[in-house]
Length: 129
Figure 1 (cartoon, rainbow, N blue to C red):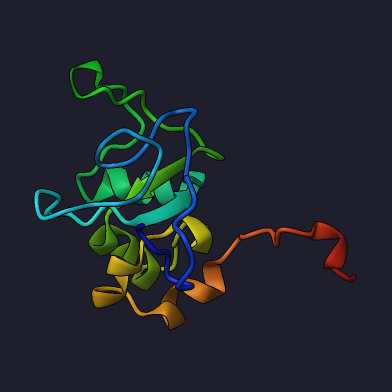
Figure 2 (figure 1 turned 135 degrees about the vertical axis):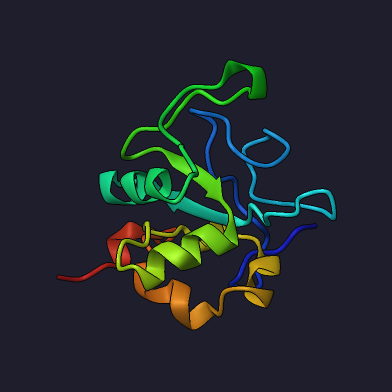
């Protein structure tokens, strides 16, 4: 059972569009995934523009790779290195910790991910203003 950065069972990241190195909606990876597509990120315009500026165009559809092109609000498994670079440049995408694979912790520390967390607890009624 794959685990997330919280030590719990890895939750799906996104199915519309279908994300993941294996295009199964999950940010799990194996030794074939040299980019470590393990961070479940919520796309923002700033993050997408940043990725384009470093040569990682996430906006343009590429059907030959089953890639639909992304819009702000889409959830996508991004590479650890590119997310970290965006973080250093001040445009980190929000992160869904429950859907971010624990293998990322060898590249990006939890302390770098937590300030960008957008997880909703299982019982949203427990949130207080």
